[in-house]
Length: 89
Image 1 (cartoon, rainbow, N blue to C red):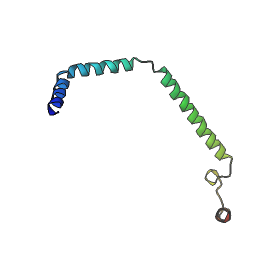
Image 2: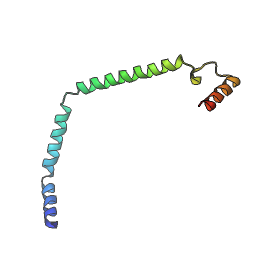
Image 3: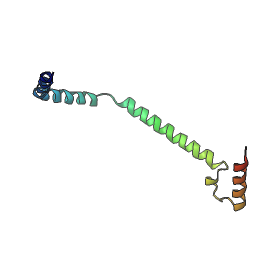
Image 4: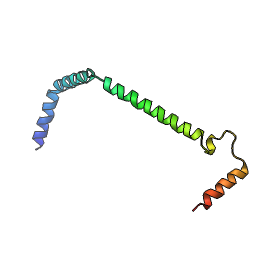
């Protein structure tokens, strides 16, 4: 068994230039592939993400969420909101 492993290591070491050559050819072949489809999908996904983010911000701007309220909440409003949130069943 040990001899077989040693033979495989020797075979790999002797054929190392061939392995590296095949690896370089495979990389060259992969870089020659048409990547326009991937680029197109990345652009589409980026546009969808930006539209989704804009929609979320737009919805929150015109809702009653406190962190987009430019005037802020008064102490009475904060206490009232907290009481309603804690006592809601």
